[in-house]
Length: 326
Ligand code: TRP
Image (cartoon, rainbow, N blue to C red; front, side, top):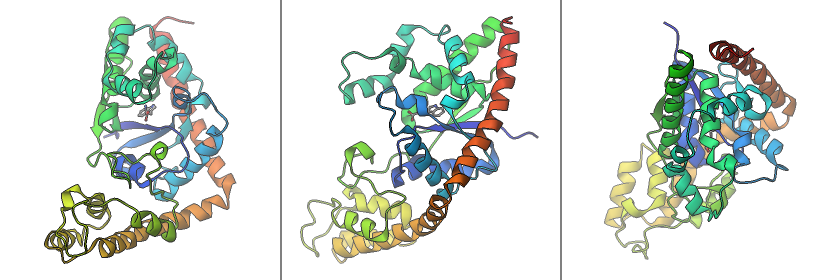
């Protein structure tokens, strides 16, 4: 039986942090054997919230280095940029006829972004970005899309557009399913619910052991645990969340030690640092190798764009035929 195809995508915002790993990359790496995967570098999506394109290329390279260093295999699954496969923009235009403005305005993820970023007057491309995302997915006939909770509304819009197209012009597209990432969000070092570059509360996949140690030393813990022997509440401590993820073998012991007061925050953080560092060690080694051979990274992208381009072209031929265009 043929493997199902998945399309996963990420905006190129530079070096990735462990929140990206836990929230997306780890899942993609697991799925790359079970599915035929395509990995999209969503460079056009960056424009929805930042018109300055100065860093896009460098950020793309940094992200791709992290993808490979963390374990995504570009031989198994092509990596490609939205901007370099012209069919994305073409299909985006056709799909923009199949959805109303009111439907796009009802998107809860968009409403959240408008609120968080204090956007007074939204640009047309931002309102329409789920349409471009639908084109990203359906161009490769993605049957499933690994996403976090916030992207589920976009997969729903994709399904509606696919249905609309198929009803109007004949069966071309599948209706993709969201594949929810289980461990959705890693909190940031400041205790904010989300680890994010703009909040400056991240541990990068490329951070050295000393950097990880310094960052964790400053991380917020349970504010009620002031002295070493005070009993703590692991459920409100972000360091405990990191133990949960990166130190599964010791987590029960750490929980008990924190609650009883036997384990102080300094020691707890030292254990956490050691575990995150041993997770990062092979990632950093691979990263260094790739950084000293950037041609290899560029080759990965151009090879991926050739492979992705072939699929895209084939789909657009079907679209043109179904629509009796050309
Ligand atoms: N919208 C996603 C984000 O903002 C990125 C993205 C673009 C994407 N195209 C996609 C994700 C296709 C999955 C599938 O993070």
